[in-house]
Image (cartoon, rainbow, N blue to C red; front, side, top):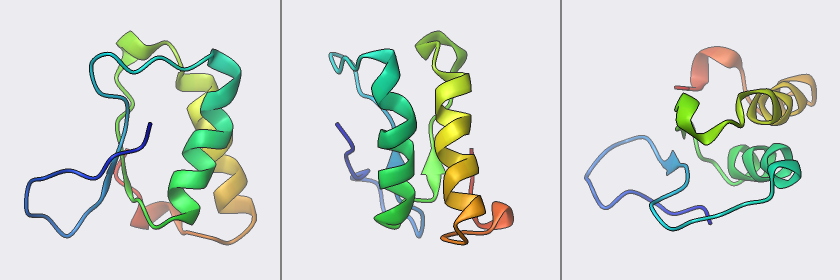
Length: 74
């Protein structure tokens, strides 16, 4: 589930919180959808084991011109 941080910040946060579980094949679409929705801070901790899939979502958003790489904080 994508949730917004409760901390005051100019960046939105997208990433799993404790207890969230996603099938690995959903990560690419989840990251892509988060970027489309305006999220720019993506949690890419290695413990999630989804680096490849998250990267695919980022790559798709970049290739479609939704966002520039320098606008993302991964």
